[in-house]
Amino acid sequence: MSEPEQKSPRKTDTVVGTLVVALVVSLVCSSFVASAAVLLKPRQVANAILDMRRNILEVAGLLDPESDVEALFDGIEPRVVDLETGAYVEDADPEAFDPAEAAKDPERSVEVPAEIDVARVGRRANHALVYEVRRDGEVSKIILPVSGYGLWSTMYGFLALEADGNTVADITFYSHGETPGLGDFIGKPAWRGLWRGKRAFDESGKVELQVVKGRVSADDPLADYHVDGVSGATLTGNGVTNMMEYWLGDHGYGPYLRNIQRGEGT
Ligand SMILES: Cc1cc2nc3c(=O)[nH]c(=O)nc-3n(C[C@H](O)[C@H](O)[C@H](O)COP(=O)(O)O)c2cc1C
Image 1 (cartoon, rainbow, N blue to C red):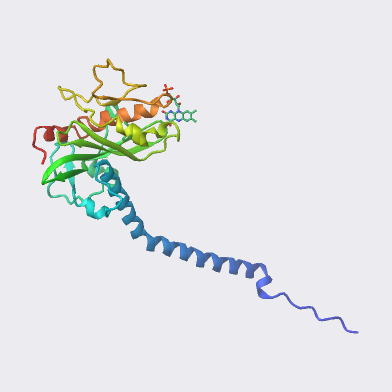
Image 2: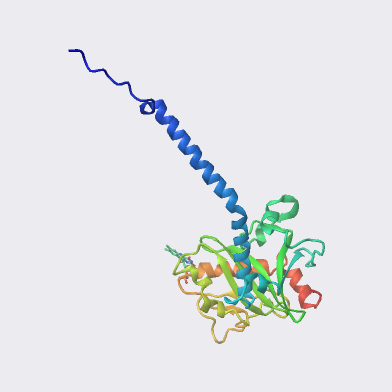
């Protein structure tokens, strides 16, 4: 009797065949992922802009869940400000200006001198994007982007000032990595409420707005400028104080806010 004929292995059962199949599958999958990333990019950018506008409307006190964000944002005018002079840069297009990109460009940014970099900003753009809230043609509030280091992370937010350039209307933090249950008090509505009506500058123009350790005491002579801290999370509160000191100071929005206070801002 003759031996049964041995079948030779199919091509795909070989090592080379397996590698070819794996390569083809990974090429197909990676091209899917790459195309999805490219195709979804414009939508991601649009969503990021929408989210930022929602935050700005919220701190402006204009957010209404029933209304369209874009329609509400018509009441807000973005303006580009030269931080050194505090003047508006009239020929700059606010829609095209990206402060984060500008801060990375040595030609359009400056290093924050170490002795005043209490908020650990590092570099800041020469220009800033601020937002004017208009009611009946008049500026009713000014929204200032602020950032600074807390205990674990850079905290990003918006400070809303009344048209006097001094009284706090609201504050919001839209991004931070502080600990849930401790440093995340900065995002809590009850704590935000403590800021309303506080003042940023004293009579001499010094920045006095700060988060104190514990509660603001009844006999605190600077109670108008002080906000309660949270026990057990003083270091995040200190980060917010440092952020106010830098961004409201001479290297931040100080020159701009002085123009506003003199009625030269708009
Ligand atoms: C795991 C861990 C996470 C913490 N997260 C925060 C925080 O997000 N913010 C903060 O201020 N303190 C945080 N703390 C506490 C700080 O280390 C520090 O003790 C506190 O800020 C001091 O505040 P106090 O003087 O009011 O007690 C954390 C501590 C631990 C152990």
